Length: 134
Image (cartoon, rainbow, N blue to C red; front, side):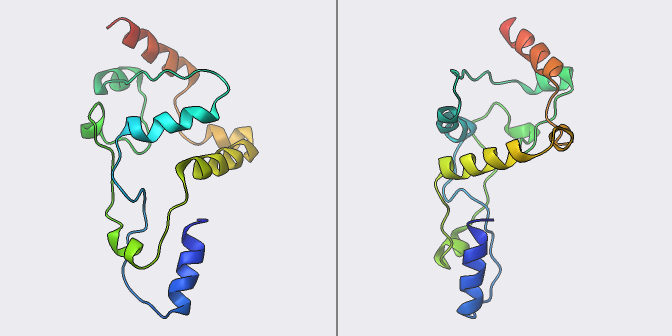
């Protein structure tokens, strides 16, 4: 929203109508490229374990933004935002967005965070055990 609101106001002030896809990032990235920089936000070392569709199914884990056909591949969902970029939309740096999102998340109540649909710790441990056995 911090990127979109000023841009939408700018479009209105310029009386520039149009249909725009304002989803980022500006260039396609894979999950590794997206997640690796975020490890800087952690106070503990991070090691990624890439779950397979089979392990996710077996553990009952459903991940937001992960399409079944793309898991385990180098692709992530990407939306062409070229028209929005030509119209002046600029995305802030990933770590800035991540820090703001993390601050927002930590400000949520435990009840609200529980409704987000993230895997339970037991599911995560089961998935890690299955990955280690491979």
